[in-house]
Amino acid sequence: MPFIEEAALDDVDLLSARDSRDTLRALATAGAQVREALTLAEEAGVERVSYGERPRSVLVGALGGSAVVGDVLDLLAEPGSPVPVTARRDLPLPGWVGPLDLVVAVSLSGRAPGPVALAAEAARRGCALLTVGADDSPLAGVTRQARGVNIGVGRDRTSSRTSLWTLLTPVLLAADQLGLLDADAAALATVADRLDEVAETCRPSSESFVNPAKLAALTLAETVPMTLGDNPLSGVAAQRAGTMLARTARMPATWGELPDAASQVVACFDGPFTAGGGQGAMNGDIFADPFLDAPAQPTLGLLMLRDASPAEPTPERAQAEALADALVETAREAGVKVVEQVAADGHPVARLAELMAGSDYAATYLALGLGLDPSISPHVADLRDRTERG
Image 1 (cartoon, rainbow, N blue to C red):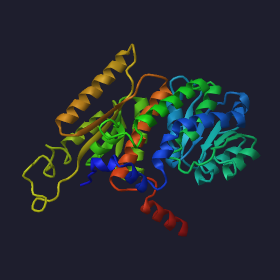
Image 2 (image 1 turned 90 degrees about the vertical axis):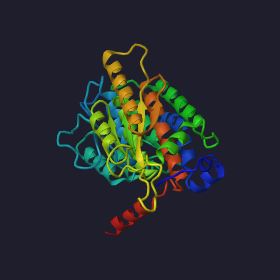
Image 3 (image 1 turned 45 degrees about the horizontal axis):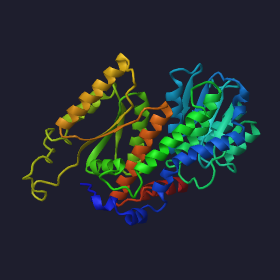
Image 4 (image 1 turned 135 degrees about the horizontal axis):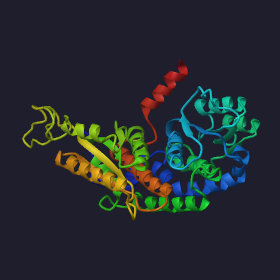
């Protein structure tokens, strides 16, 4: 069963030795990424997106660690956007997309086949084009030929998982200028400040008993984790958390959003990974012999991401909070190890940023505590080699 010694997470030198590509340092630059991206977007002429006119629709093409960009834009635009926003991972470009539409393609390297192919097809159809990627990349080349807007990603950005705000900030700024959502430069500056606060709280030198990300890693280390959001905003954060737990910490994590996911999550409390569920649930037996009775299994873990409570909650919001409270209470009674992260009040993007950043740090500390390099997966590299040879 996975296990982390608390002392390992408080040993800064050990964390650094295991973190070959400085993942923790890269996560700590999130606030700086926002500020740099605002400058790069302005220099690239973000106001020229869609020729300064509101498009008929917006389609976002991204995959892998960049895919969350489309999810965030869809979340924030849905309540008030006058035009539909959709996300796409790969070709084909839907048949209805044409010259009246805006296609957004995102790739940190600018070389990911999916976004490049989407951008090329969008250019062929005469769509307005916004791309975010390296200036010297095929993606940027396609955009220039189509007279679209490409926004560069700056220097020292090596992974889309740790460069989320480099990719997301220009897209949010462009959407604000088109009137699709509220995320102007001033609002995004508050997001940068919030990300700096999370980086300070979750820094490697902060000891486990006061560091929420390290505490989350210690709690989730011996579990099969599920991530759950209590509304659409925290639901997007929960999806990101599940991705980071799987890709960074190598923990198979499911994710969901209340109220739809309540029954499937609670049903797991009756399964083999809780104290009272099934014959395989032996963790509650203090007399179990790991040699005669088989090794102890991991328990169920729940990472509950909760949005800030509004000053004047609506009946719907009050009902959602009551459901989340009841679910957490039920989980604890069933022997589930629960970690709760609650966003502070503020702009929706700032609240989302806080929840996502917190789980990013937790997943990274979980990997490091388990002796894993959060940035390098031998099996992912092997799969890439096999694919390229094939």
